[in-house]
Image (cartoon, rainbow, N blue to C red; front, side):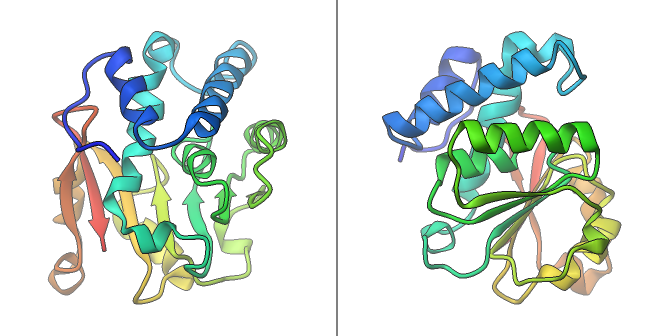
Length: 213
């Protein structure tokens, strides 16, 4: 696994992701990127302006979350699934699943068209341990998650409240929060805030990832 460093441009983003996986994993990620760009012509999965920067803005941005959890958390026998909230077009959850096909991953997406797209991606990439929950998180029977991720899902206090039934003392949180990371962390009660910290994003020097490990 390569040493994390700031990522600038598509070539560096591709190289970074390649350093996190093998040839089969890279093929899955490349296939997924093509599926996103194709589907983006029919529904607004990602901003059109970011299509030319999909590796840096979306794929490497998602993949970097792996380096904020322990290897034990990613292991096939680590326990419950990785839970991704509001998966949308699959960032970050489907990227995590494609890079770790032996790890169970649950993608929560209540919007029907996006959930259908995720289902097609899971099938096309043969991600047998990844499943899509096409409903609101509140309607899912709770289970113990090994890790919880979310990108543009909800403000931090609401996110933590909604995900609490899935969280244990061992659950890792990795929450890309853009430029609002530090500000959102300050909205928590001090006793809860002390359990989290902000890591700088490798793909955007002004963005942060809220981590509980």
